Image (cartoon, rainbow, N blue to C red; front, side, top):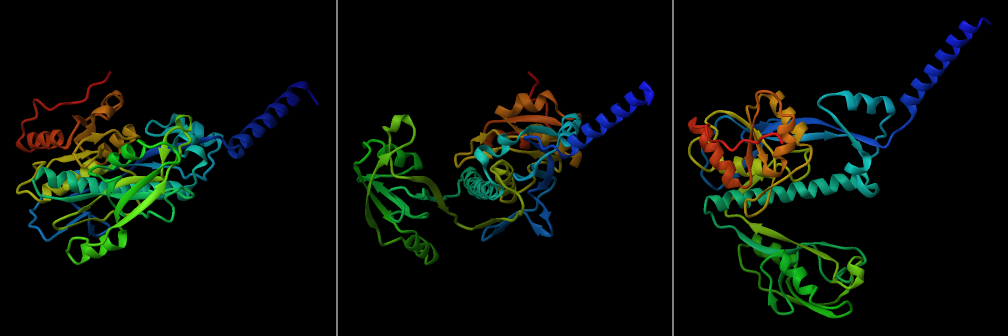
Length: 364
């Protein structure tokens, strides 16, 4: 066989081997890309995203769109060709698999965690919006989760209302950890609780709970801090009772990042006029009960998805401003917000057409 022919044949075979390796060889990466964006003031799959019953609502105009990021599933194994394509695609982002699914987290675990965060973001959005409107919301501290195998298992249950710890009244979730960690591992902590079933019955019957229980739990040592910190194996959270019904209907979405846009949508529906003045506004950001807006992941993909849908303005958490502004889509104005008050102020300026002093994000 002539040398030239042999060289070409060897090169062709090598190319085939490399292509096969690229197609079949898995790499430890995952991909993020722009996901759907949904108007919180409108309908989704034929149903209103926000449904409010028991309180007067008002017609709205324009868009207040929440935005999402689409990610590959936990069990999907990207090959080398797909990774290279993702790296080259301008609107996608290839990241280490452990960035999205740390510590071997399964798809089921990730979905459950995202669902819980989404549910909590809805609750905080309702609270933040109603507080802005000076509408009272009843709140109390609850057992959010109980760690399996911990001292609290079988004694405390998710949904139990924590009235006091060691006789000290509990007003915030942080109070629980503070009071427990005053002890040394091995010491007893006394909880006064309203059992979850009693709390649920009282809410259903519109009465004050009448039954409390005293629960004594022996603390154990935490895995961190050299084993010197006392814990009982629970996470405390907050539950609320609202004076009227607010339902947020949006399937196949998870995580906490839609909180700000849900809060603004609720506020808009409960107030006369239109916050946006008919303009197309999108945005993102977590929100807590006090109305503070927090950063989120995937900001670059969310701005791309919003602009592709037609958004002209994007409400951007202050901590995400630099990253968003570094590669902002053309025609999309990024508005920096730290709180729901910031967002409402910017929207009122947009609605009135006074946009000269909008607090915009700037590239670093």
